[in-house]
Image (cartoon, rainbow, N blue to C red):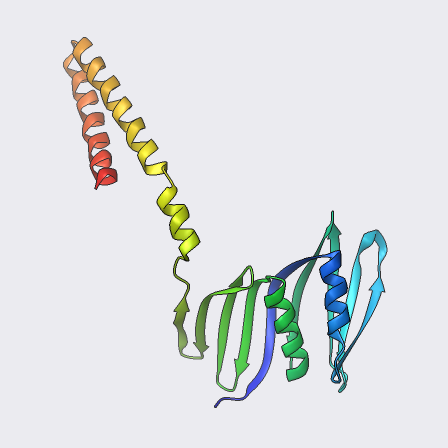
Length: 195
């Protein structure tokens, strides 16, 4: 099995409430990791997670109302620190890109709200898609309940009726040809939507 060399968090974000932040701080300290909190101006806080060997990760949180938002870009080598950040990222529904770096290749994970949406393997020879998230049941229900296509069909039918009425009133051949071109374009679109 390949040995992971490092993990990079690229433009990753996560959010938590003040209560969740306190809960996280209570569980952050382990026999391998300690933390310290720096209070900065404007309600900002910086949490520094430090591994016993000296590696640190700085988590800067900005307060937005009752939510603390952390923008995270870092490279982690230590497995204990990496595990702590991974749990934090998944638990608090992080969004962003996580690169897991191995000898000769990198696995690129794209997260959205704490869930993996895409996994790619990147080598010097190129990139290969390993996994892509398919629609969840909730997303499928939302798409099923969406009536945007039906509304567009109704709108196209109203436009067709208006153009047919206009065609009956027009006498000039050029105007009739223009209306016929519009009718042909709209009926093709209507046929596609109804299919």
